[in-house]
Amino acid sequence: MSDPEIVIHTVRSKKDRAAFVDLGRAFSAREPHWVPQLRSEQLELVDPAKNPFFGHAKVQMFIARRGGAAVGRIAAHIDRLALELPREQGMGPGTGMFGYFDAEDEAVANALLRAAEDWLRAEGMTRVLGPISLSIWEEPGLLVKGQDHAPMIMMGHHPAHYAGWIAAQGYAESKRLLTYEISIAREFPPIVRRIVQSGERNARITVRPVDTTRWTEEVAIILSILNDAWSKNWGFVPFTEAEIAYAGKKLKPVIFEDLNMIAELDGRPVAFMLTLPDINDLLGRIDGRLFPFGWAKLLRWLRKPRGMGMRVPLMGVLRELQNSRLASQLAFMLISRIRDNAHTIFESERAEIGWILDDNKGMMAIADAIESRVNREYVIYEKTLTPK
Image (cartoon, rainbow, N blue to C red; front, side, top):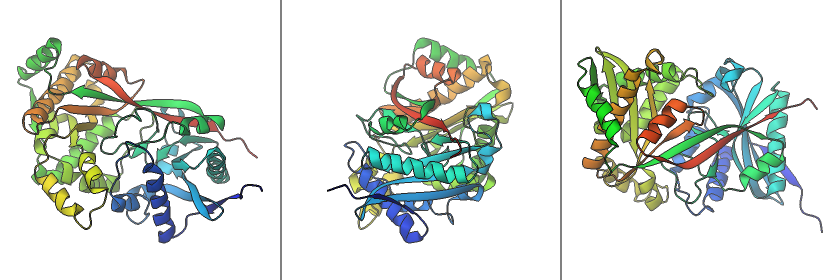
């Protein structure tokens, strides 16, 4: 008796989106070190009415079924802002993307990738990148190293065999993203301490905590630096005003002034570093659910998180200062101040920095200087879409 046919269904309704999210959660739950995320947050990310990414992107999600059972999912999307970027920066004209990729087996994976490619081809795309779920700022890349430990806040987690299935469909590695782990209970090397001390003697430099009572203004400052600092990086897509407001609202509950800093030069903001306590530590204990009792545990955790890991998702220095001695001083001063606070105030022992592009030599040199090590690697794949 032959196997049932794989049928690809397009996601069209709120009910379909919920099924799409729940299917991804079911696949993730099979992984030993997966941490269940808040379902409400995952539903919001795929809701065109709530996620401002949809304001500049066209998205189509698919669910694969075999014999009536859901056996996989994928999203195909076109980011209009990414189409406007130079091709040498990774995106550019004709580039579509896929993301939210899960499959029961290789046959399902093939059918899903073909469905995403066909949709992108019909929309005029000539190249596909993925997985990127959905924005480059959300969960880019497929985890290819680091399945042996739990992901930190806002990081994806995927089984190792997905890489082979994607490669078998003609995809080649386009970019590798690295995260670095560091023990923050240990003092930084002498050379880093000397750079920090030199910067502290410079009267032109001020390192200050973000002011959460002025959070909207601080977010605008941080993201204006980010949009400038990262503007020539591979895969960079600028934040829109709506996304800035959205990001600020989502991040505020996990922003603590002692862990997030802005550096000023002659009173002008020129660099920043964001650090988030790893809420995955809590989410694992409440199974990603706020009800019936998870919300109370969440509120207690937010009042006084202690002893958890820390993640540095973003930092940046204005481009005009990059590749200068001053840029190194600013970066190490921010890292040193936040490291001290994380260890002494929040009783943290370890942190994770990233992701970092594998050709970002400046950030990789900083990570090496503070004696961190690569603990997780993600790959974004690409493929040329030839006309049928």
